Amino acid sequence: SYDLTQPPSVSVSPGQTASITCSGDQLGFKYVSWYQQKPGQSPVLVIYHDSKRPSGIPERFSGSNAVNTATLTISGTQAMDEADFYCQAWDSNTVVLGGGTKLTVL
Amino acid sequence: EVQLVQSGAEVKKPGESLKISCQGSGYNFTSYWIGWVRQKPGKGLEWMGIIYPRDSDTRYSPSFQGQVTISTDTSISTAFLQWSSLKASDTAMYYCARHSVVVPPAMPSSYYYYMDVWGKGTTVTVSS
Image (cartoon, rainbow over all chains, first blue to last red; front, side):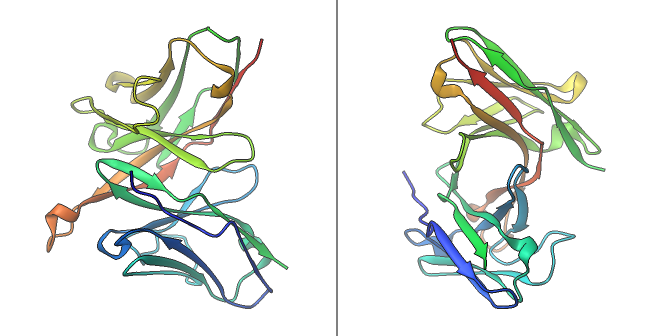
């Protein structure tokens, strides 16, 4: 089965740039989506097709994907961005989800 | 407004059966795959499977194949997740999610799915 690996936690200071990685074998040949889940809430799609933002998602969220690693970047991180983030790809007719990364805004 | 409305919290005993629901509105229900995602307390998201309401084509994660049944009733734009015999380990939050599929024109074989609309979740507690 295909695996996606994320760091368990990432910390960032307010106003700084946060980068959350997602690693998988030849991930660059797949399209990656990212979801944000705040405590007690449902997940929300923040990036799809590696780097596209759905309507309503702030421009400070961006994504990239190359070789074996996809990256979600949050520029000018705000306290409201503190959440769990999950990467996702499609492989062998199934959705594959990363284990999640807890973003802490210190 | 596109939304998915899920049924309410359930408390069941081990061995009991259960069927939870997810009703879509604001879009053509039969034109999008819809699926289920499990989240155990304090843990990450686990994808369970999807169904295409128009023809009932269903795909399951290997981890959930044979453990649950996904179905739909297009007359009421509703998807279901069903267990025939619950276990304590089924205790979790269950989210339904609309899946959109993208077929890149330059590489049709690289089609992929992502989850663009989520329900608020249904809590299932299984305890004796």
